[in-house]
Length: 103
Image (cartoon, rainbow, N blue to C red; front, side, top):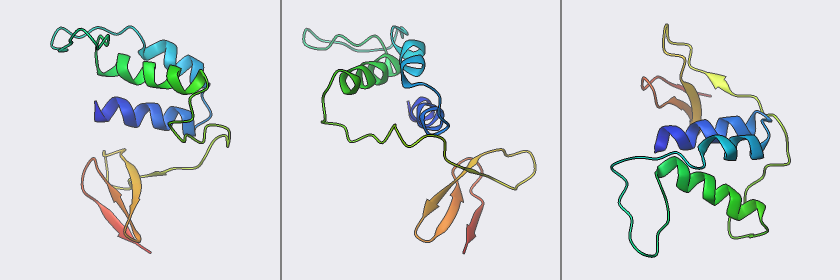
């Protein structure tokens, strides 16, 4: 779930059309997904696609900034890692390998 969320975030921040992202994740099925009478979600990615749909259909419940276009990202410099460096407390941390760099 976290991985899919991160990939969706990177795609949107990189300028990929949000409709394309939504179409890719909506409808994905998972046999371990638990549902009840009020929940009509097929999987975690399907829930994320439905949340994107919810936002695109006019709900302002989610405050997404999807109009700003591509942003630069920092890739972890550790050999073979390839993770994305994320800001945390004045430093940048790689969630993939744990590498950190402070300014």
